[in-house]
View 1 (tube, rainbow, N blue to C red):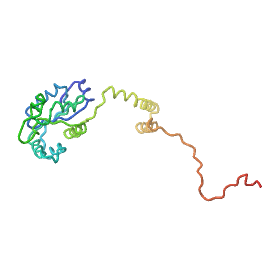
View 2: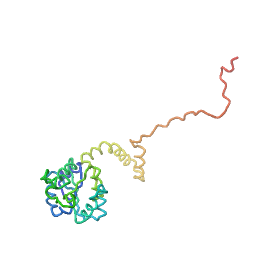
View 3: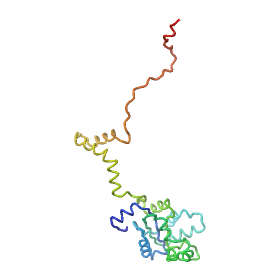
View 4: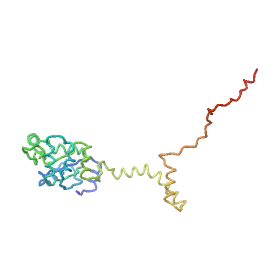
Length: 234
């Protein structure tokens, strides 16, 4: 995992994330590709070198299932080592897609000569999947693909330190501080159970309702009604 300063981490923790994969044909150029990524303002927050099985490659590219190039793509991705990177930056998904260039190497070399696929992709007679790198197409795919390689990674933005303190001041302290003061005052034999009960009965999100007087319900059973005063008037 790439190290960074506190200020850099504070930035990328609250930014968008995406997955980048350096494919087998560009594995030897991984260092150069990573330098290009950093020079364009994208932060590498996680890096993993793996070699996929055909089953894993098929799962990663399941969106291509049914297309004529799918078997060749799976075989190619399982043919050698790859590098999986988690990138972080503002508008990271679109910026990485732009930096990669078009999926077709010939098109990238003709119209986006400075893109990564134009510089490191290979034109072959077997297809355009020798295009050096892969990137998530959208946020949903980024979440799925990041968790494919990094199951325990939090993809969503992590609150900054000042946001955590602000939340604690507004929502936690007003409830917890009186409870801790009362705990210190009464000093119960079972402090944890006492504190739990104290917080439960004083939960500001679930205020206790004032007991209402029981309402007189109408008796629907058959009975002789009480006569009114008018009924005695002759």
